[in-house]
Amino acid sequence: MSALFSTALLYAVTVIALQAFAAWTERNLHAFPFKQEDWLRYLLPSHFESRNHKRIMLNGPSTVRENLRYERFEAAFQGYEIYQGGISAGTLEDVTASLEYIEKVYGASALPTILVLGISPRFIANIPDDRPFALGVNQYSPHYSTTQESHRIALQPKPVLDGALARARFLTLKEPERFRISFLAVANHLLWKNEGTPGGETALARGINWVSKTYLVARLIDAVGYPQARRFTFSEILKWTISPYKFSLNEPIQYRLMTREEYNKGDKHGVWRQVYDWDPRKEEVKTRARLKYFVEFVRRRGIRMLVINMPERDFSRVLFDEHNYHAYLDLVRDELGETEFIDLREFLDTIHFYDREHTTPAGSARLSDEIIRRMRASIVR
Image 1 (tube, helix red, strand yellow):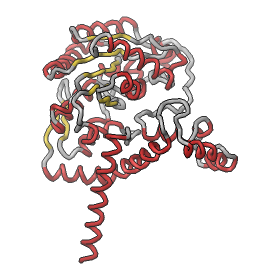
Image 2: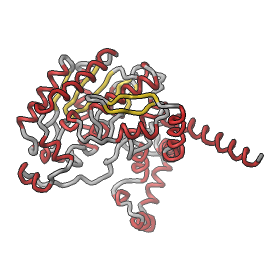
Image 3: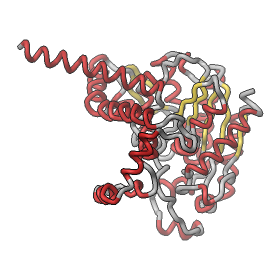
């Protein structure tokens, strides 16, 4: 019995120590766990229990996560904490629920001072119906579960037992990845003396990079199926591993421009077919209700906001019905009222895109710098 108790005690102490260590790396070393499940970061107190109440939050769908580089915003707005809160497959309902979750769990002081919100027709149309943010909260949040209402995701307190089970589920299924990323964040910190600048690697990093490019190591990397290693150094891959970005190491996807008729023949029931066919005038009541609820939430809490209509690749732009697209823009502008709104749909060129809406690192840098310029002229002075 004493051996069992000692083992359990050792396990508990180890887990507590690892959680504290992971939280420290997330606060101080820019560790972003859950690259494939970014919505789970909303369950991490370390991302929201801030020592600095001046925070700029980048929020919206995965295009915000990929296309807006938090490090460029940090360099531009010193004195503010920058949080990259983009949600894969997220919609306006998910962003609204994420802000409500922050307020309920971490307190009003954890809400952003400034919100940069990226939007698109899919985001406003609430497509698809089944999305991961609410599912993640239901499975892993110890505090709340979700219910779908007509124009929002409502948060309901979890019973004590359900909360305990969710906490145990998160500990066993998700915390191991968090711990792994925290150790990689320390390794990344040791390999860079001046992150983000040319020649910023340490001598150790340059040595590891050289070894990783030798013939035998390169053949080994090829054998395990990691082609990105051909084009990037070890230290660059490590930095990407702890970052929030998902596609930065991928080769851009090549598309052939086609008409709506051609596209519809090949995509009869997919998500993007729903997006391209969406007519906001047919769902105006629900869409306005979602926007109105969100805008009122932000305004009541004194959050300054900049809304960006995110860039799209030419392949995607030509597949929209332009009458529907203009109706979407008119509806958004009407509900936002005096909130600053910038339409950057055509801001980037084809070479700046990884796929139909996510950008390459170069495209992300250009877009981020443009938004920073607009913010300096308006909401951050």
